[in-house]
Image 1: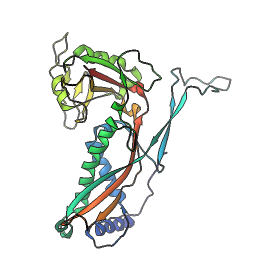
Image 2: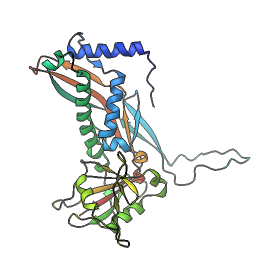
Image 3: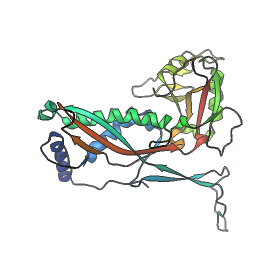
Length: 319
């Protein structure tokens, strides 16, 4: 269920923002928490898209409920075609399943100096927005990779990764063994790409840490001798690896030799593979008493996430 925000007049929006600023500065006494104005929430979400690598490539949906039900069709046969004289009916629902993605409360606790709140020339609302954004981005991105699904989203790397005997209907991510002693082979990157079904390639991305990227930058095509990594030629455009864009995520495992087995690279269509769901509002509670000489703010939002198509994501495993 996707919700649309009500259309508000410019006057009501201005009043909402001014009331929020007064609340931050202590000019308006509100005993309970206050909802951050939609204008500021939109700014926070835009910055989250830039700061949270998983969010930037996954599917993001807003809802007013405490969970989002996603219907999964595991039928690999054709589900479209040309209408004939007979009515097209489907009686077999055995291939349908449902995933319920629950929303959990994510908090951000920040402190602001009294002197800043008393400074009429300071844009306190922007300071609050930036602090919330940085903290939320760091926390939720780790959960989208490693969360156990208990009071937090279920992360991609929390699921089992198998490099043999992969079953399409299992809740398992298919992987390729990439190399030994913290190295990545060119042939294994090609093999990983080949594992991804063609229908997912149109919006596929590589996901890796900066450390892993530094290693892959030096790999060359075995036949042409050219580097398989291509730097972006335009600003704000991603680098590409074997023709597909690369997203750097520092929460991904870095290359190292002291771990028995770990996933260093993910490749896939994350928009089809991973679903993020959130409520549109962010609440803020102010505590001016317990952290003097600072004012403590406690922001909360509800977020969930889970893998919805295991076939859309592949993993490179190092041993």
